Image (cartoon, rainbow, N blue to C red; front, side, top):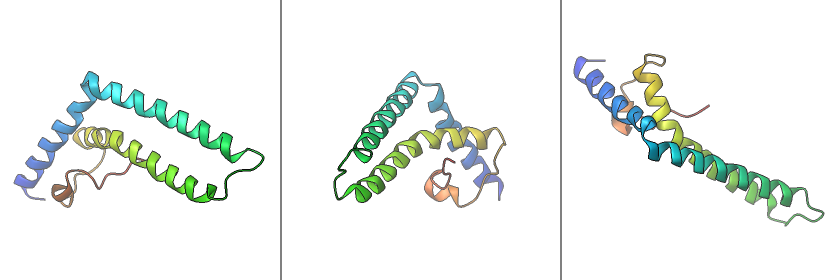
Length: 105
């Protein structure tokens, strides 16, 4: 990776990881986690009911995708922080999509 690419990546990582310190981001994370818990509990109660709806498999897939999307929004700044701290290598292709190649595990 050339020096300019690395500088750009480090700057983006700094901007994204800065979100973690923002009170609004912390509120967003708390809200999303609370919503995730609520949706999961509701889904499980429907799933375990005597007669779950016939489209329960599709609803389960939709919910999983929605929850992954919510987690992803939180994971982007956390991934940037890890990369900024040198815990994960910077990669050239991330210049193109602004860290979106990082996925929460």
